[in-house]
Image (cartoon, rainbow, N blue to C red; front, side, top):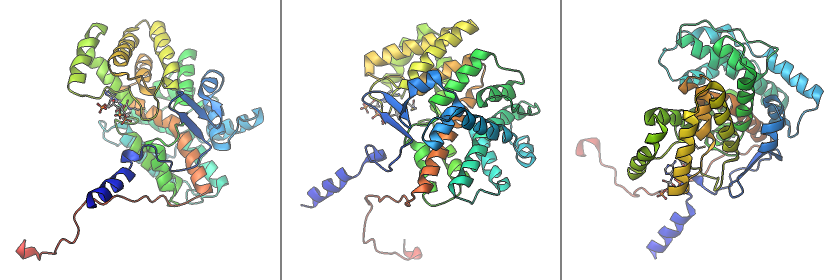
Length: 382
Ligand SMILES: CC(C)(COP(=O)(O)OP(=O)(O)OC[C@H]1O[C@@H](n2cnc3c(N)ncnc32)[C@H](O)[C@@H]1OP(=O)(O)O)[C@@H](O)C(=O)NCCC(=O)NCCS
C-alpha cells in the first residue's frame, strides 16, 4: 500500500518540469512535433526572410507588427538609448580581462538599474521604456566589454544604425559589410523568443514576485549562461576546433557517443523534428563560409548532423550552425552567448510585461523525499 502511494506521488513529479504548462502566453509558441516556431502568430520563416529585428521587438512587445510610423518611433527611442551611462561604461574597463563576458554583461546590466529612475515603476508604459533601454544597451555593453578586455576604448554607438549593424560596428570599429549585418539581424530575429525556455521562465519567476525588470533580466542572464542553454553555441565552436577537420568528425563522434558525451548544438527538449531556426542558420553558415573562403566549419557541422541523425536520430538546434556562422564573421567564441542575450532580451522583456500585466506568484511544490521525525541530537552528543 505504502509502495503504491509512493509511486503515485513519484509519477506526479515532472522532472525538469517537462510537459508542465506553467503560464498562458500569447508571445511565442513552439510546436515540437511540426518543428514550428511562431511569434505572436507569425511564422519564424516569414520573419526571418521578410522582417527586421526592430520589427520583431515591436511585435513581441505589442502583439502585432508595427506600422511604418510606429517602427520609426521605436527605432528613434532605441537609438536614443544606445549610449550607456559613464558610471557603467567606466567600471567595465576595470573588470578582470579574463572574466567571462556573460558574467561581465550580468554585472553591467545590474549596475544599469542604479541609473534608471523608472526601474521600480511596473506600469506597462514605464516598463516598455525600461525594456527599450535594456534592448538598446545590451549591444553597447557587449561591444564595450570585448574592446575593454583587448585594451581598446569603446566605440560610440551610431544612432543611424540598426541594432545589428550598430553592434558589429561598435565591436570592430568599422562598418560591417551588408551580408554580415543582414546575417546578424536575422540571427537576432531567430533567437528573440522561444516560449518558456529556462531563462525566460527564470525571468517570469522573478517578475512573479513583482521585482523590477533589471532583477528579472539579471536572473535570466544567469540561466542563459549555462552550457545546456545559451552556452551551447560557444561549446559547439570549441568542439569544431577540437575536431579540426571533416575527416576527424566520424572518429570523434564515435568516441564521444561511446563515452555518453552530449554533443552540443544537437537535440532539443521540445523539437522532435528540425528546429526551424537551424534551417536559416545552416544556409548562413554555408554562404558565410563561401564568402569568406573557408567552408570547413560548415562542412564539419553538416557531417556531424549527418552522423547524429543516422546514429541517434538527433537533429541540429539553433546553436549547431550559429557557431560556424559567427566564427566566420570573426566574432570571439565567448561572445556567442552574449549575442544570444542581445536577441533574447526582447523576448524576456515581452514575457516580463506579460507577467506583470496578469501576475500570480510562481510557487510550485517539491515532492519531499528526505527523512521525517529525525530526533534532534545536541551538538556534543553527535
Ligand atoms: C537540449 C537538451 C538538454 C535536451 O535534452 P532532453 O530534453 O533532456 O532530451 P533527452 O536528453 O531526453 O534526449 C533523449 C536521448 O538523447 C540523448 N541526447 C540528447 N541530446 C544529445 C546530444 N546533444 N548528444 C548526445 N546525446 C543526446 C540523451 O542522452 C537521451 O539518451 P538516453 O535516452 O539514452 O538517455 C539536450 O539535447 C542537450 O544537452 N543538447 C546539447 C546542448 C545544447 O545544444 N543545448 C542547446 C539547446 S537549444
